[in-house]
Image (spheres, rainbow, N blue to C red):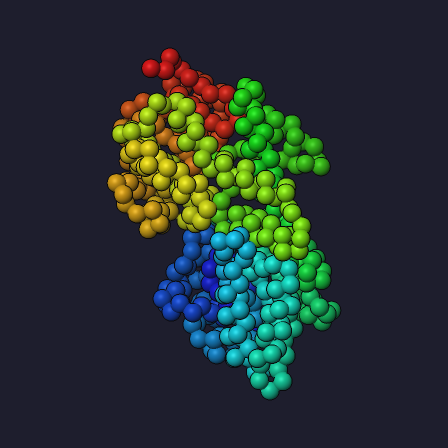
Length: 440
């Protein structure tokens, strides 16, 4: 089929590339001509493993096109996907300005009946309002059908998730629309769930809220383990073997970040409040996560009397490995607080260092793509992102490069038994510390 995708961010670009890979002709539309020019040259505007290869292959096959002109991109399209951002407002609600703009652009340019699919994460009721907006503005009596098709992609593994996902959710108002979208997605070979639109919209929020709840729960257990001398990894293992609980998302650390969990949990609290329901559980999840992001500061201050003039290597800046996305990354909270306490900061990330400089500024911070540069002469290291090269690094590397090998591991990257054989003074989350010698 001939498809159009409005928006070329994480969701839109991956969606467009994936749909072209399974045989559809897809035109991706973005209002930013600079991004479009880059994409036309075969260069993705986001970092996502495997994306560039798929993108170039389908461009070469003539199935994947890019334009900044809606008239050109929407011409002849049978199905139009809206995949624009819904950033968080100050009150926690989702900002739907880009959704409304996309809807207006569709109404101004379509000349035939189409199905409009909202891929973006939007509050319940948004699909219905978008359909009403488009149908009120179209010319010549043209009307659209609307559908909800939320994405469940993890940044850093979005391509894999697209082709190996757990389910595809399709929310529609009529059977014909549902059948069309099922036909489009059938080549993925993933189970398809058909629902009403409101349920589809809620599935996305409910899924992310539940996963965020699991993360905050295990982090609270980890904080108790710290006080009792227990090992949260053993606790999580024992919990996860219960099939009713499962092992996923039971890894203790310094909290979740990214473009989805923080935004979607806050939005769901706001949605509930708008309908006179206090979502107390989710409010607590958010509070726990906010505190967890400064946990390493508390551990540092408990170890050192002062951070003034100490060189601190911050290892990892992106909110998770295999992405350059810093949205809601704990590093964005941690680094300004360390700077305010007088620390000299060397910040390492293999991909996101330049992005971090744009957001945080220089301010005396050394940004580097080399682990060695960050660790050299450091008084201590704090691990924020569990990049593979950090996880694979031997304890002896810390001992060799640092002034004194003191590591605060916010992602529990290393096995305790391995660290106990080292000369590294090691603090992690919810696990006993290893202190190889008397602290001076």
